Image 1 (spheres, rainbow, N blue to C red):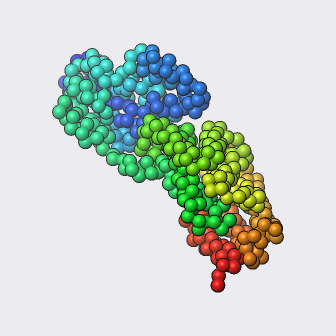
Image 2 (cartoon, rainbow, N blue to C red):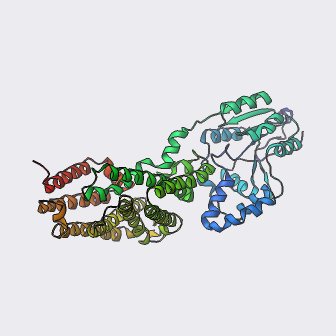
Image 3 (cartoon, rainbow, N blue to C red):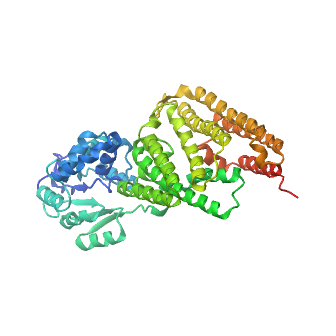
Length: 496
């Protein structure tokens, strides 16, 4: 076997070291082993985020071989190795081995440019062996390369997939990292397994987290036209509303998955969002790329069965929210107007799915109140960045100093929504639905209190995440909601 030299002094000149056997090299796979993701898919997502038209070129690159495809992806994308989801227990093991003077080689099917960046960041590896644009260093090709370099049984190998079985068969010892029990058993039949690193990920909870079911509460806005027109008790219309709710939830989950894929870099730098499934490596990127079109297709099919016009509204929602995820969220102010429009589109969807007549007052009220909530959400992020002494909100186009302006715009918009409600009480439309319309004025101070309180909590840095999600967990919000419902009931005069 070729003698291995490294920068930690293996093979020193004193007599004791000359007689001691050189440590067996440890060869480590990258994708799925050292990191909980795959750099090919990471590069692909970044490339498509930069320009979706690259999708038309990918098949032609693949025709020249996977190694060429990987090289083209690597050459056109930037990767920050510091944010990758490393397997921390295994990484700590490698650091311990390195401190003891063991040579460690990074051996991966990923392109050498990306592998070199990871190796430079970690500072652990004696050398990097990777795909080079001509040879895809995977499976039997990887095994042959290592046998040529170190000899049969002259190295230990750490891997995680069935592609690593030929490599384990040629290794002295196998280290199995984050593989299924079945694969670990297959590895044990081919090689001597010295270590098994297992950090099981609860995939069911990861799938649920990626779909964001708690965000489905926003789609309850679809029932507002039924409630405000006093038709929620009609079974046929309520059933249509439920179908519209399900369609919006499916599409919303698909969009959330897509957004997480496009935002993967920014999420990994965020103190909270870094735990999202794709950012943390709990779910593989290919699963997300397959899931989001299926969810969108299911939602649109259900919408079409309800009403073509409702399907058109849902399609508009998808176009706007996808544009937001791709580009609009990086444009200051336009991003919050886009978010407010997405809420209003849900309201329009409620009208189209049930056939309830449109209300001018409801649409105007929704524009102002939803714009206030969108600005509140952005203020929370800006305030958090300011408290962390960050000069700007990454990926959003805002400077930390914009927080005061955003707060002013948001609170003003909320108060304008209350003004619209007060004017509605004095309109001719209200007498059709309410026997005691003047009682509705009691809702105005309730709404003023809720809006003011929400902004005060945000100003104190005590609101985290989406304001609507906050409201679902806030006792005072439930109290305001119950009193508001009581006022609405009293105004109808439906009591004996």
